[in-house]
Image (cartoon, rainbow, N blue to C red; front, side):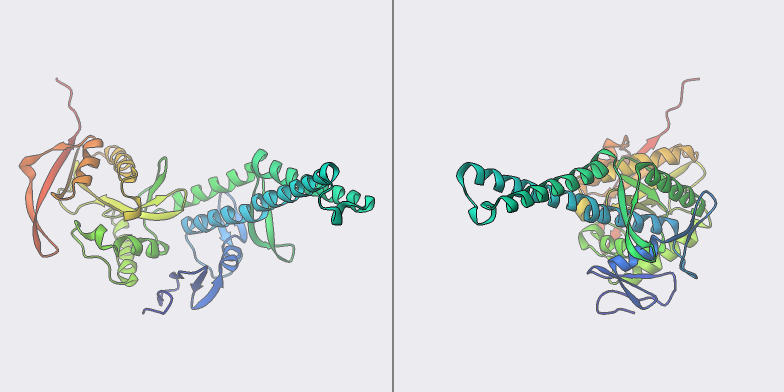
Length: 358
């Protein structure tokens, strides 16, 4: 069922992202900070368990890690970097004011009194000291902050570099345990992993774009419910060892920007055909190439020796990606296909494992 600000789903595992800074979960609205608190308040986070304090709460570790990363990014800026800039700027302004008065007698209204000059000098030193402390914490020691429940209320907690690294390793450990079939691939800029329920909005933003769907065998999604249903079907397929669709997640933005997977055709113990799609905002930036290369390496590890790929003839960019990834043209497999009620020429490629001469 569609709502004014987004979508709603009866399943308790679904979350409604709104376009503004807010979330809706189980029909209850949360501000961004409230949601950060909710998903960064851990009862247990160790090698054996990743559990939030809120009873009856279910979220995958991948989603908790995503929200925690966003919390860290925004809170570190708000509680460390921004105050450092503000205090340093204030200190500089006061120092310049005092210096200007001593040289040119400017700002006499503020500095002509010795006691006031002493007060402003002390204030400037205090600001400078705070700025230096925050600079050391954020830049030198690489400390980070996150917003959560603490000391009987809400506030920012500071993490050392080693604590942050340890927590991220624990998230990765539990994410691996939660994988149904496909262990995630971590590459330079992206992560290839199983789709989860909470990817629905990101996936919808990609799949609803008519330019993305133009050369694909599926229609652009008309509403987010289509994306929800597709992800639920996909997760059921993981349980059968099928990986028709996997998420391509941007590591920096913690956002799903496309998918990659296997076609239902040419699928055997040693052969497969890959399919992929990338959000329009990420075209021409090498994300597709990185995903294809990383995915191919995993397929080889899975025993695939012959990998096919194809694209609509007009989609020249996709062909360039495949060539850059080592595929070669295979004109014998070229065919025609109905794409959005129009017959299209399909250009084929192949990547085979080289066999040594016996």
